[in-house]
Image 1 (cartoon, rainbow, N blue to C red):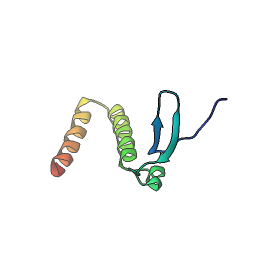
Image 2 (image 1 turned 90 degrees about the vertical axis):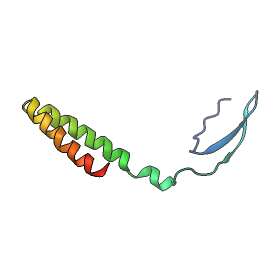
Image 3 (image 1 turned 180 degrees about the horizontal axis):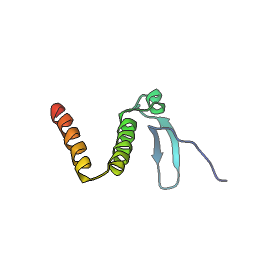
Image 4 (image 1 turned 30 degrees about the horizontal axis):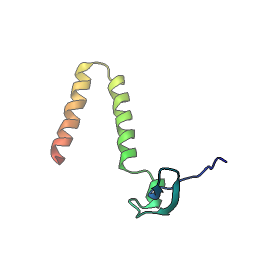
Length: 79
C-alpha cells in the first residue's frame, strides 16, 4: 500500500536498499516559529520588485541613472 507522509524540516531517515526505516527528529537548524514570519529575504524581494517598477516608470535614462547614483551613494555609506 502507498504511504503518504508529511515530512518536517530536519527530520532524519535511515535509508537502506529496501526502505526508509525509522525516522527521528534531527537537531533543528532554524527556529520553527521563524519559518512563518517574513524576514529580510522577503523585504529584499519587495524592494527589488519596487525598484524594478520604479525604473520602468521613470521618464528617461537620465532619471534612471540619477536613481542608481542615489542608491549607490546610500550603499557606499554602509559597505
